[in-house]
Length: 442
Ligand code: UGA
Image (cartoon, rainbow, N blue to C red; front, side, top):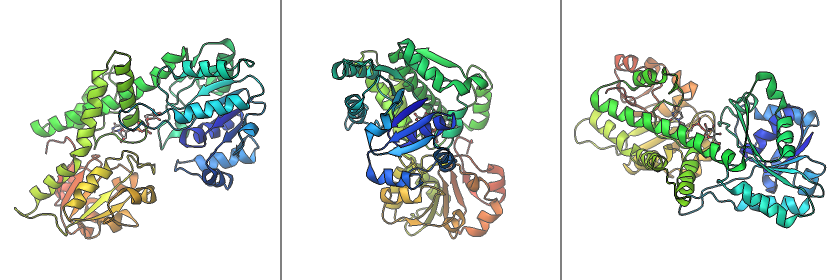
């Protein structure tokens, strides 16, 4: 089988490489010449573990190719996947569908045979129906069928998530569309992956509902962490005690600085707007958006208060060295979108402190987004050297491996704010640190 994927961004590229690995012949159409050049040169425009090798081996096997010419990409294909960006529209939070409709229109105009046109980008409920109307209007001569096939990939583990998903969701209302999508995912039959066949609107809503629910879990445990600090409880045990109930589940109950990234913030906001527009408001989703934004906005103040409380009374942070480990919104990615580190570092820099920042993958993505005064270290240890305060923003394994004695040796001060609870509080306190985790009954 042969398919085309429109958009060589995160979702497009991962899906293309993985479908090719399944044995499908995939051609990716990318309109940005700079990105296309990089792809043709074998460079990955995004950081995703294992992606470069998967792309290289499937290109070598002749199953995966890149082109700037749409007509070339869609020649003889059975399905065309649209995997272009759907950023938040300014002022309001609705997803911006300009790129999706522009891509669909170009495909429809260029087609010379019927295909299944599939949205992989996260699109508002009702988009599939609009695409069907567009197809009927632009190409009444061809039987173009529309399907929705949302992705549930996590950055940093996208390939594993694609190859071993919990489920595949397909919104398709014709036998042919269902058969084409079923055939594409056939290799997953071997691992008994459930393939859920639904209508278009249902598939579109499943994607938003799943992301909003996970974002709600994270936000809930973040609030419980604050409560734990106030009443002297330990949020790890609260998470465990809740999560062992099979109805709740243990995943996504790790407290932290608030969720970020390209999906949860955008999708929770979009779902809140979709629900308002449909006159069936989701007050829970609205609350998740507001609570998370407030958490990220208050992060800098929280860190400053810890630092001041630990230092000699009345002193400020001017000239103090603050090491910040982790800049992207989570480990194993260079994605800085909506990263909690941005507002936190802005607030810390305003105190006149010297910020020494380090991230194993996101340094070049971070630089344009952070205050000019930030100093960039070449390693975690270099950032920590001589620091008065250490702030841990993400849970990279190399940060977890920093031993208390090594930290004590390198740092000038003795305060640690661990926003991901990667360190053992007792070990840190034994090494002489004033240690603040999240929700660990200070
Ligand atoms: C998320 C979903 O997990 C994917 O299923 C979905 O496909 C994707 O969005 C998308 O819509 O494209 P991702 O944004 O890569 O994936 O990251 P997650 O690992 O889900 O983390 C999201 C945020 O929640 C991060 O800021 C992370 O640090 C935070 N988080 C997650 C916590 O603070 N605690 C947790 O227990 C889990």
